[in-house]
Amino acid sequence: MTKNNEHITIDGDDYKNLIINAAKCLEDNETEINELNVFPVPDGDTGSNMSKTVANAARELINTDSLPLDEAADKTAKAMLHGARGNSGVIVSLMFRGIAKGLKSSFECDGEIWANALLQGVEAAYSAVETPAEGTILTVARKSAETAKIAAKNNNNFEYVLKEAIDSAEKALEETVNENPVLSKAGVVDAGGMGWLLVIKAMYQALVDERRIKYEPKIDTGVYKNANFSSYNSLDIEFAFCTEFIITKHSCDSDTSKLKKFLNKIGNSLVMIDDGEIVKVHIHTNEPYRVLGEAQKYGVYETVKIENMRTQHTSKILEEKDEPQQDYAFISISSGDGFSDIFKEIGVDEIVSGGQTMNPATEDLCDAVAKINAKTIYILPNNKNIIMTASQVADITGKNVVVIPSKTLPQGISAMLGFDSEADERTNTEAMCESMKNVLSMQLTYAARNSSYDGMDIKEGDYLAICEDKLILSSKNIEDALNSFADKIIEKEKSFVSVYFGEGITDDEAEKQISSFRSRLEEQGIEVSLYMGNQPVYYYIISAE
Image 1 (spheres, rainbow, N blue to C red):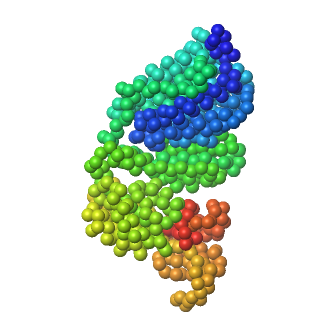
Image 2: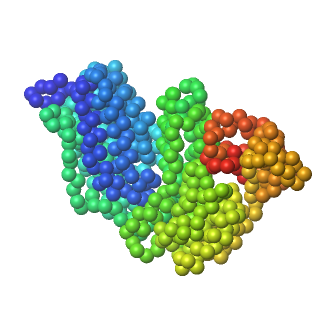
């Protein structure tokens, strides 16, 4: 509805245009927003995350016929929730979720309704962030919404109220550089705050210029220049892994408050949304697999994303400086996407594909070393047949390369966890080697042919249970093979067991196959965790410590 060329109210079609233009604006400016925030924001790609989040809603609306306002707002909120990426994307989705609640049962929206909807959006975002910080997108959104509330009392015109909110957001954004000590040190405004300002400015432009839906804002220089965080050490990041996921709940009535309490104990920057049917979580933690293991109790995973913020920051700095910015770096030989992801998550810089039946060449390892800028480079062979190859790399490259003689993937993981960033090279080398000694490594594979070994009559296709390079059982029954591992774990008095299932095995199949194995160990007080390794050759690789 318009009056004297001003929009007193908006309807569903107007709202659709506002969202589409916001998506286009973020897409046009995502690089500029990204460059504002490299550290300590976890994702390092705030603009991309916000853009993809809003674009998900725009795609839904573009392919939808005319809708009533409340339905358009609801569709927008749901699309953003499912498409939300990163901390900033989740917060934007929460903002629009609150807005949708504020527009419920409304066919038209005036200035007062819009101001209340914005405040509900801010409330939804703040409630999901455990420890809200000033000088962020939350601050910009809150101040602009509060201004909108005041403006609506003076003039109940939607266009007027939105314009007042924009003016307030611009001032609030400029203040973020002084409100947040990290931004102050870098001399930039908050990237998420900039993104939110661009969203509401693009919405306004779509409203007042119906002939040209596309909006191309210019980003000023000065305080909007690229961030310079080279003075920070990546080790200043308390929690290294940005972990986010969506699960479809087993039951809409299930209470996820215990999950939230658990997550608060092992991380920070928690943003958690329970929409009844799905739960979306964003958290910074040093224990991503504990997070995923606990969350799995409440539903089935739809998406999972884990990123190492320390390596992201280091990579950015290395692009800007020639001298080494790392004291240590790591190369791991890995077999299977799941294992590769795990190594990256715990700090490995370069992954070389290889392992049993596919040993990498010395040249492959030298190429990996060439990509790294560090004073000391550790190589984790994770296979006894690759240790000698790795030992050649130091002479060939002329770099300080230290080979940790890990013979299995679990040993490699344990060695990484034994690393101390504040210790010297000798201490770390000894500690990593010592950590490997505590690991009991087991593999479950198959017999490729008929044979006889150590008194065992082995038939092609039999399950072969291998513990520390020794064949302990050949059987046609997978449960017998797994129970043989349980015997060893109990005998060695281990406390924690990690089970990695291989290529071609689904989550459900793995859960069923290890059910008896898990029950037996848990009866002994031994904790069992299941992960996707996606490794070839071995059905299961098991680590006990």
